[in-house]
Structures are given as structure tokens and as C-alpha cells.
Length: 315
Image (cartoon, rainbow, N blue to C red; front, side, top):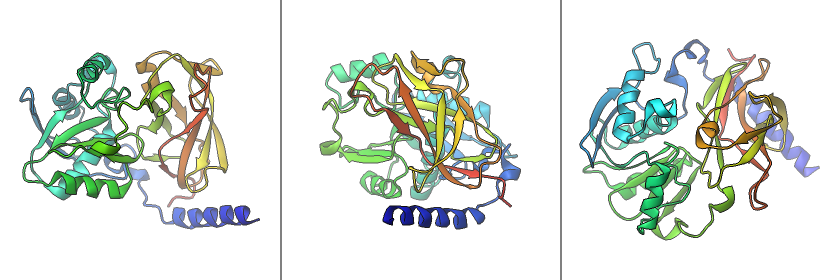
């Protein structure tokens, strides 16, 4: 009875909160309302190794994504835009913009590590670097950076309090920021080299954006993968963010098979589904089940990040 009462209270609170959702439906063609953490849309980044630099607005005047500007950002990150079929994680870029705007508006962000190929990441690890096998740098979801004149430990503490993302500090100038599973660490607590990420144990599911409209198409991506050759179930569940045990709706991944094989990284980055058109306003997560699992240590399912939906009762 106590559990049932808790669920009912959480559902009531979510219902009340959903009534006051900001109406971003008029801006859904504009990415200006897509993320929980967004700055002014401007980034000034310099690559510490090759000197490449970009000072760009990621948004056009109408709020849509500035594709040319984002491609320039990809270049500074060392991310092969054409080969990957997309950009560096947009959630990462807008979070970076948000936190650096608060700490040091208009200052240059010095990038020490951006995108890494799996081969380069492995070489760093083999040479003794403090590098994770499933580093989010491989997925184009991470940056190691510093800003001159800004206390990196203080900025790390500011970001970790938000519980929004991955943020690490190893004692020097650099901060690691990623758009993966919310977590934080220092050099002594990083668990790099412990084998914790083996057997896909740290696999993470994320949506491309944070804000969606009911009935909208959603791109999903899996990251922090140690081994490919597993499958994902075509049928997924939408659950309430506040009570993940409560199933709200079923959604279906695009694909022919009931168990969709994830054989390489590109497939893992482009999974598509569509939200139900009658999904009520609220905050949700997506529950994805795995199939054809090559390891018994691999989790049977994974929950996505939180997404906020403007549904059929949104103003």
C-alpha cells in the first residue's frame, strides 16, 4: 500500500507540473528550446594541439541549427562530420555553452581532447594514459578543456551539482565534460582500468534532444559500448521519469527484425522511433531491452536520459 501511495503521489505531482510546462511548440522547428541546459548559442573554441579555432553561433537568427557553424565546430573537435553522418553531440555543445557562459562569458575554450577514434583511444590507453576503454570521446560526446583564468576545480564542482552529465577533474587545469550518464569523478575515483566498463556494463541510451512534441520522431543513440554484436528489442517502453516502474506507452524502433543487431558504432548512433501522438505532457524516459546478449554480465535493459514532452494538453 505504501508503494502504491508513493506512485500515486508522484503521478499527481508530475500531472500538476506538466500543466505549467513552457509552450515551446511554436519553436519546434527551431532548436532554441531543445535542451535543458543552453547558453547564448555562441562558442569560441581553440584546439590546443593544432591551433584550429572557431568563434561561431550554433543557431541561426530563426533559432534553427547553423549547420555550417556546427561543421566548423566538428573540425576543431577532430570529428569527421561526413563520415559519421552527424555532428559532435549537440547536448554536449549546448551544455558546454551554458556552463562556460556562467563561468567566463566570451572567453576562449581551450580544447585539449575532443573526438578520438577507437584506434587512437586504444593507443592512449596502451601508452599508460588515464583513458577508459569505453570513453565517451569515441562517441563524439566529450571534451577535455580549460579556460584561462577560471578555477577548474570550482567549475567542476558547479557542474557536478547539476547532476546533468559526466564531469571529471584529475587535479590539473582540464575538466572532462560529456553528455553521457550523469556521474562525477576525480583521479582517485575514476575507476579507469578496473574493468568496470567491460561486457557493456556501462552502456548508455540517450535521445538527441531533451524537449520533444508528442508524435515527433526521436533519434536514439547507444554509447559507452565495449563490444558490438548484441541486439536491441524492437519494442520499447515509455516510462515516467519520477516512477520508472510505471509504463505509459509502447513505442517501436524503426527496423524489420524484432531483435535489431547492433554490429558497429554507426548503427548504435542512429536508432529511430516516434512518440505517440496522444502522449500527455510530462517528463519521461525510454526503457530499452537487449536481446542476443553475448555476455551474461551485460545488463538486460537500459533507461534513457530524461526527456520532456509537450503533449496533447500543452497550452
